Length: 159
Ligand SMILES: [Zn+2]
Image 1 (tube, rainbow, N blue to C red):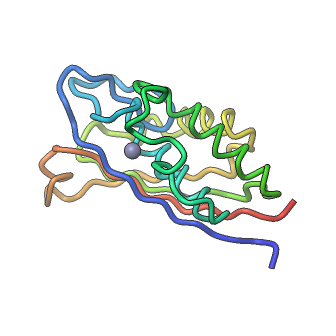
Image 2 (image 1 turned 120 degrees about the vertical axis):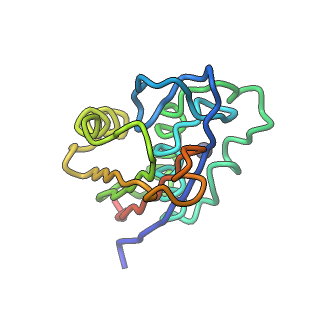
């Protein structure tokens, strides 16, 4: 079996005065997501899917939120590190499929830019990265606009 799949999930809550980073780009919004790094919820879900596919533990294991090294860090750097961990173990990425669940801001207009940015970081064709956006139909913490969740699956193959 030369192919493996992995799943990733992440959530962050909104905090006023923070910059909002999703999918490697900054979005114009009155609040951002709270986290030790830039709190890019989509990139974190992708990192966990990639690490999970290669059975390399999780994002918190490699980049602990107690480490000053990763305070305020650009999550694109973490994603690049996950890709190199995969390469070290002899895998490359096949494709990635994701869903971001947010009541606001509207993400659909930004999806092509996010895909392009993530493709650049992972050195993949942008066709290998799918991003879907949905809301929570006003239910639960996402529906009340308290935070954002993201889900990702990744397929990797032995080089
Ligand atoms: Zn996160």
